[in-house]
Image (cartoon, rainbow, N blue to C red; front, top):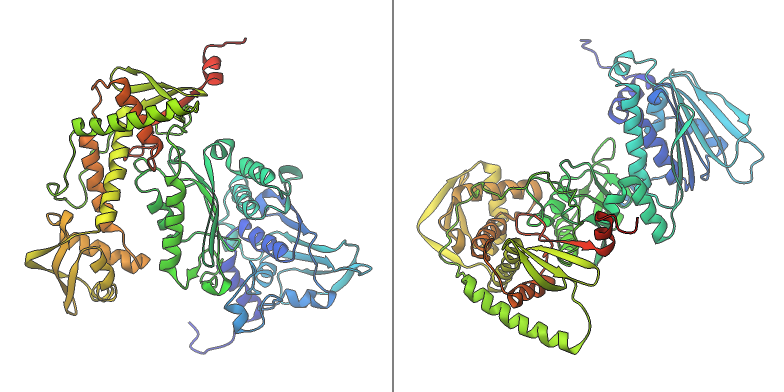
Amino acid sequence: MNSRIKKLGTLLSNQIAAGEVIERPASVVKELVENSLDAGAKKIELDIEQGGSRLIRVRDDGIGIHADDLILALSRHATSKIADLPDLEKIGTLGFRGEALASISSVSRLTLSSNTANQPSGWQVVTEGTDAEPEINPVAHPEGTTMEVRDLFFNTPARKKFLRTEKTEFDHIDELIKRIALSSFDVNFILRHNQKIVRHYRAATSSMEQIQRVDSLCGAAFVEHALHMEAQASELKLSGWIAKPEFSRSQADLQYFYVNGRMIRDKLLNHAVRQAYHDVMYGDRHPAYVLFLKLPPDQVDVNVHPAKQEVRFRESRLVHGFVLRSIQDALAHTHAGECAASGEHMPKTITEKTAALTYPIHRASMPVQSVQEKMAIYHELHEVAEKKNTTGNEVPPLGFALAQLKNIYILAENEEGLVLVDMHAAHERVMYEQLKKQISEQKIISQPLLVPLTVNLNEREVNHIERHQHLFHQAGFVIDRIGTLSVVVRAVPDLLRDGNIEQLVRDMAADFIEHQKSSRVMDSIHELLGTISCHAAVRAARRLTIPEMNALLRAMETTDHAGQCNHGRPTSMRFSMAELDKLFLRGR
């Protein structure tokens, strides 16, 4: 190693910067397309050859680059998007650092052609991945910009050998354009590979056109099972589509989240979405969604990742809570009986959850009504339902019970056709939601410990527990710091007093470090309520009367999340007359 310090040359420093920004051809496409969007383009054409290693050409109809700025645009830290620190604190564009073109030009043969409004001709600059000053020449070019990147990594062979196959690299580009097209509905995208049109996403301005684009990008099955949602609180707005719980995935491969139009992968937001689906998603399945979060630019820092894939929120707890509640509210108002008849998006085999709870829970303190008592309530509900049937001709969503199949399923008829209900799963959800409501109304009761529990932690964990002591108190804990590396627990939530308190405190501290909040206590309590509901719900193989079946159907129609049981399994299925006719080949 040379012991003397010297300044790196422009080319080498740009190539080092390229290592942070340009991982593969798709990284180049991302930077160029984002520049086009920032320029106000409404049509973007992409030509890719050999997966992007030979050619990446991005042509747009944006405002273009002034002739005097073309050469400057290829130098590092040159941008038209920010000018001072206040601009950096409220970024409203996708790009802003002014590093992308310099980095790309240092590892490729780049041609930049552009024209602005009311100019007789365009201008062009060419670079060859060297320190040589590029020349500018006139060129015939419409208003807008064309970026042509050839022979990517030709002068950095160590980087080039890490590229994958042509198909793999193009698949990354294809997925990237898909993600961008989902957030830029008003832009027309054309993607070609080796001179063949692979994708054409036409501009979508109306609601129907936007749904059609989502259909083409995420699949018809997603749209069929998607709920459109819009929520707003103060300056926060969340909109988009979330899939119903029955449309779950084995992988997190259909999850798209955008913050102020920027596609991101953010742990805090992912955690909020996962929590929202917590008690309606089966097992280890993953939800599917396309969501757009809008908030004032000065409330989010996008300058925390070289490739701008992560953000940091000024009020992270507020954002987390808003996203969580908004999705929970949207899911809560789904109606029972809306599951797809085929059930093709559920796991191939479904078994009950049998894993032990993470925190053993005291069960004796929760009163549980007997099945007979619950049936008595159903009789009352049935009497109310009968009065409404006598007063109007409306058929309720789940219809009226016809019979019971094998003492497991309720067969009902509604206006569309047949409704099939798993009576145990349905009753389980109804009871679970009732118990949750009781807990929320009574709040969490704290139970003092006869012998306070000392928990040894590291200093960072102790600091976070002390900082969030009021949140522990809200959760039913009385906990004090007694040293640099320890705390003492003096009281705990009554329902969890027989659980593993030390492990719960440790896990909550870890949550506060990672997410600035924790839902461990309520998750554990809800786990208990789910177990109680499962054991107290009417069991399979018990024969119900027609009034009891109808009462259960009416209760489902007024219960949040009634489309799934506590384990995430569907409670009901609908079969329209058209679907039944198709099964029996009627009309052929």
